[in-house]
Figure 1 (cartoon, rainbow, N blue to C red):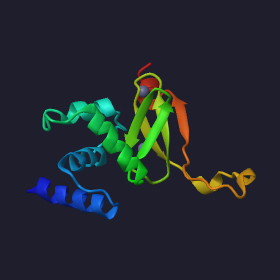
Figure 2 (figure 1 turned 135 degrees about the horizontal axis):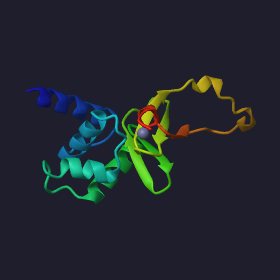
Figure 3 (figure 1 turned 180 degrees about the vertical axis):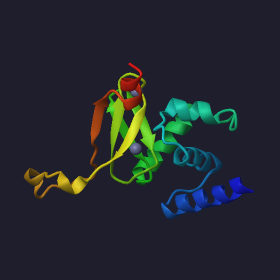
Figure 4 (figure 1 turned 135 degrees about the vertical axis):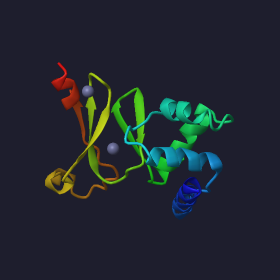
Length: 141
Ligand SMILES: [Zn+2]
Ligand SMILES: [Zn+2]
């Protein structure tokens, strides 16, 4: 029962953002909304393929691209070769630990960042990435 309710709200969320809610799209978005891990295409594929045997990595990739185009997902590319996805589209910073590979969210006061040399420019995306070692890794040293 709980899953059905959840499915329906994800369904509405997709419709509100002009995306036709197919079963696979619903499943992918549901997964993304339920995780703080900033998963890659691979991670999402592996997590869902047992439940959706017809799923392909290309479908996951294309679906995520569609979400990004419709602004319901943010693409996080701290590492050039590793695109991660985040269904939290509010402005926040990302910290990637170079030891455990985890990506952490942190709140960001974007109003304190000044970019006055960009007067007259149209800013469409703002990303703040930090890299280093997370607290867990520092403490277990
Ligand atoms: Zn770490
Ligand atoms: Zn995030």
